[in-house]
Length: 80
Image (cartoon, rainbow, N blue to C red; front, side, top):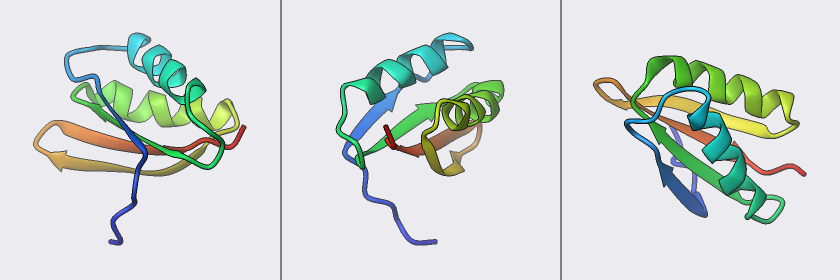
């Protein structure tokens, strides 16, 4: 898999829904269109709900990858 270059990283391990989405959305709002946000979570429901919510918000989810046991990265490109 090709490594995606990201512009900002948000490590929110320890947080649970809905805070994971809210913090991700706030971080994305501070970024420019086209930039990529890497979100790191350790709560499996967040690894599923954050990408779903981002797509509903009109953002582009580039990938969700388990980077270590119980830890996921979510890569989101700001579309608007």
